[in-house]
Image (cartoon, rainbow, N blue to C red; front, side, top):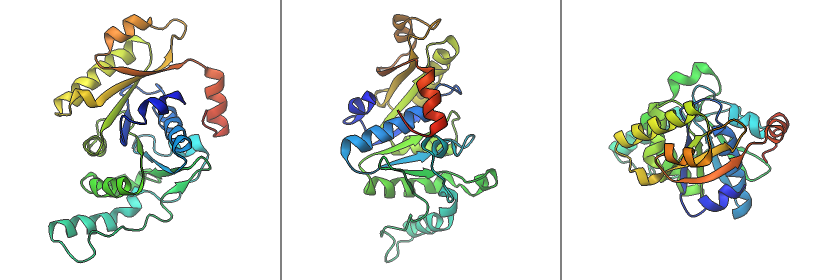
Length: 241
């Protein structure tokens, strides 16, 4: 994916986000992670933080995640307590065995929850501990942030140095992308850390390129052509393209 070359020097902890469902956030996240892993020749971490569609990343890559971030709740809470009252060993790495799922491309998948019942176990306040741990282990961490401004997503924003807003060339997506950018700025994140990726660019009946650029008030660093057949085959076979 050519987007990986553009992003390689732009960010190390990257959140892929968009407020409209179906714009391709998960596909962009997965293909970006695979592209970076292949480019680097070493593992890249891909986090599924879409709480309303947890498990989509694993399906796109055709892997099975039996454990999740929610299963790390006890150790993350222990680390959070240790940070407020430092103890010996508090700064040591903790085990992520069985939680990170390796993919043949070199991507290591980490899902937020294994089932809806675990949603209550996910404490956004402890996520910075996990994010810092992953930053120390991986050159790149990619987050599929979903489409809701949850506490977990905001925690990911705070850890990131690049936010990718995924949009498609239709009126609703462009409006919601502009709205999302305003919300990000209202949370005091600098607009310079937000870039856009246009999926299904120049699709038949879509808003024309110049109008898209005028509607999205941030830099568009990548355009992905519309190719439903390739995307459908990729999704159904679990092979990123």
